[in-house]
Length: 227
Image 1 (cartoon, helix red, strand yellow):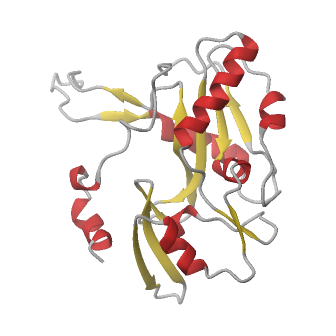
Image 2: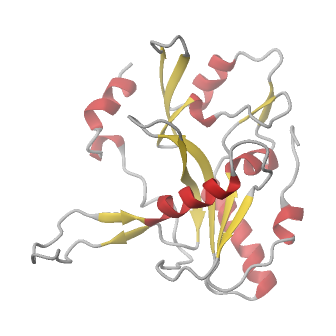
């Protein structure tokens, strides 16, 4: 547990096969990197501002104090800082998550002599205009996140011009559902025998994320960025 606890005993205990995707909660990755801050004596709002690229505080009509942020090109409350199951510490998002996923993947590939293996870092996430949380990918290695169906035709022969399918977040949502949000203590889920993905050693979040200026929600994001 915090402030730091390496993950290699967990990783080395995994039994993976060709074609598996390993989903790992970002919380244990942050702890692995020592990305923890003791709650006592810490100004959480100042910590959020330090971690966020953009920051917009407000008070919700229900009385909650909310900090909306863009952090690592993700729209998320409180810069992803978590205090559940943290034993008196704030857990920050891990840094250079793609590189850490690639390191984990390389360790497992070497151990088991694999070619096709994906590693995905996960976190819980809220969606605008929806109650509840779901899972999103915050880092990955070895598996392509998107299926590009531009150029394909729909059932009436109309060509698809812009559509790409976000497969990795859909799969991450299922994985985080199995991990749970409370006292389940399941930091890793392995997806096996799912054939409808493309494995690639060079895959990362780099080409998956949209810059705010290119996003269709750009006018809303500008409210946050121009605060």
